[in-house]
Image (tube, rainbow, N blue to C red; front, side, top):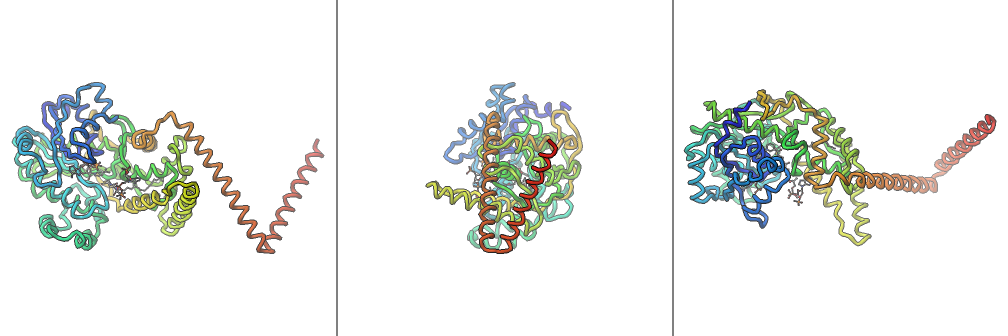
Length: 503
Ligand SMILES: CCCCCCCCCCCCCCCCCCCC(=O)SCCNC(=O)CCNC(=O)[C@H](O)C(C)(C)COP(=O)(O)OP(=O)(O)OC[C@H]1O[C@@H](n2cnc3c(N)ncnc32)[C@H](O)[C@@H]1OP(=O)(O)O
Ligand SMILES: NC(=O)C1=CN([C@@H]2O[C@H](COP(=O)(O)OP(=O)(O)OC[C@H]3O[C@@H](n4cnc5c(N)ncnc54)[C@H](OP(=O)(O)O)[C@@H]3O)[C@@H](O)[C@H]2O)C=CC1
């Protein structure tokens, strides 16, 4: 249906979080599929020694924009960066920029957030809740605004068994919490955080729930929609299969498994994974923007954007396809051969952590120390354990997707072929996150063969060593050993004799 692209023609769009994973895909899709969009105003802050303009220049060089670059090499002219630090009063937008935005913006996509699970509550509140309030205040002043789209998460209400497409009462009145925490010492906030979180696993899901409430409370006359994606993964089709640029969520887990670092993970094989490709989320977001602006719903529309309800795939199946892909397309310089298993049993999990993570890390660090290098493997494992520990989230129940199919803005995940998607996802982590060249795969395979031989040699030496120690100490072990050896000899002589007879 062409009406979505047509609707965006001539529109001025404001995007927060445009430098992030989903924001970039949103910018690219708008430029490619809505070529007549007037301008994309993106709120960007200087970061890590780079100015706002340098960051935007870098972003536009990203491979993600290759397809749009082909059709429109001047696409950058449509991107207008606005300097903004969302944690500052007034979002630190200059009065001139406020004037520009309030006079021209037609639609707002609010993607910016801190998605760290271990973010201190005060900071998560500042960015995910207070900045949303401030953006809504700015939106209220926009004279030509037709829709405000807020990106939430399917996990905002993960303390519930069933999640409908409604905004639930918040765990606490946002204003009360903001007032109470203001001026409170950070260490006290840290102490009371677990009690505030109650049945939510982290400050991320807690503050995203508060943000939904703020959107509802401050919507006024705005046309609002809330998008709740589940676990956002690499792209399915657009701009090309498998595009991903970060270690968040499952991507870090896949990479660690592909590098042979991660050998075990605590999860249930039969649990629905609820991954959703980033292009599906963005297509739904743009379609929801159009729908909200055109149909002007009286209350905020909520879209749960997940796969679990209509095309479920399980972590056990994902494990199988991840392992199979990385065996066929190995990552460079793997630590060990990829061989990871998921288990829901706590004791088995702890056993494998000890035997397959900590023990090899200790040996490798010892080897590094002895060869005069800095030990690093234990540090890597500690970070990995922290990350996978934090990923141990409750999953949302099946949620319903807005089941309308558009050709240009496809978000019908019933057509998603999971094995193919997971294969492209893993290859995407290799190409776009680790920047590895596909032509190096033969060398990576050779490296895996070397690791296999090292493992066989190590296991044989270990076995012989243990056996020798055992034999030296036990008469019974010696007897068994002589018995086995004599049995082998008897078999050998029998076969030799029978083969001589048959000649
Ligand atoms: C065996 C095959 C397995 C297949 C099955 C496995 C099944 C298990 C299920 C696994 C997935 C379940 C996922 C559930 C998640 C629900 C998500 C809900 C979706 C959302 O709404 S938002 C997205 C979720 N948010 C995140 O994922 C962010 C999580 N990250 C963090 O909170 C922090 O980054 C973290 C992990 C606490 C680390 O913090 P810190 O120590 O301070 O380090 P930095 O963040 O500064 O990063 C330093 C450095 O490390 C790199 N990094 C970050 N994360 C990882 C990682 N997971 N693995 C490897 N490396 C990682 C990061 O890029 C930095 O690198 P630099 O080079 O920049 O230094
Ligand atoms: N990724 C996922 O699996 C899921 C994500 N979501 C939601 O989707 C949205 C986007 O997530 P995602 O793209 O993955 O997140 P990213 O971490 O990749 O991007 C976050 C964006 O927010 C911006 N931002 C953060 N802090 C500030 C600040 N103080 N001032 C200005 N900008 C800031 C970042 O800018 P900068 O580059 O300057 O840091 C970046 O552009 C979020 O609302 C998240 O809750 C929902 C479900 C799943």
